[in-house]
Image (cartoon, rainbow, N blue to C red; front, side):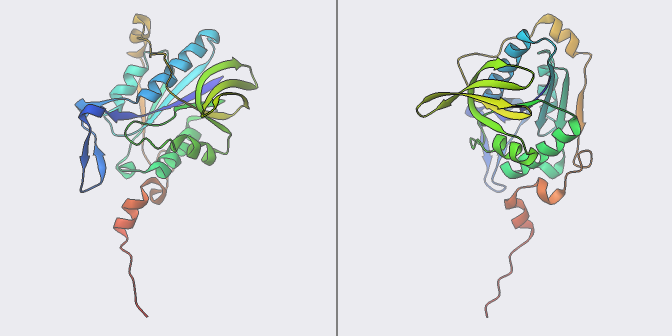
Length: 234
């Protein structure tokens, strides 16, 4: 089974700074961390691999080159492959553009059975990227998942949090699952995992590597700023 995990590097909440001119969150190297929802997602994936050791993990992130160090550290968690999508064209991407870029990257990464991601990021807090990504890939998706209850070669059964309690839903592969945070903390990597990670490299792909169209890779706000609207009065 091949599982691709989407993660994001976000600013620490207590250190978060905002650029009023560009209307974007400033991302300084020393103030960045793994998105907490993604940390919970990785823990769910590691729990699954304890039951099924043959599971192959690819971890993917879209961001600046600062995220390369984060992915290198995550390779110590028995992750087989790490890919960073990084290009100046991607700077300031909104959720629509982010879903598009990730979908292009995932198609280039190869076959997958499942895509895991956090429900939302702490710097955007929209919860839109997961569903948007699933729509672009043409696969079903589940949101607000808190636990994997059953896994077979054809489908997975998950517990999904709702306003009225929990739903128990079965989804067939391929599918995307976005996880809510639960009470499980991300475990520490093993010494064996740390040593193995030193032998692995983070692959860095730009817009040309994944054949991403520039006009779809940037936010609508940025495009609008580059193309002033001309209004004529009849």
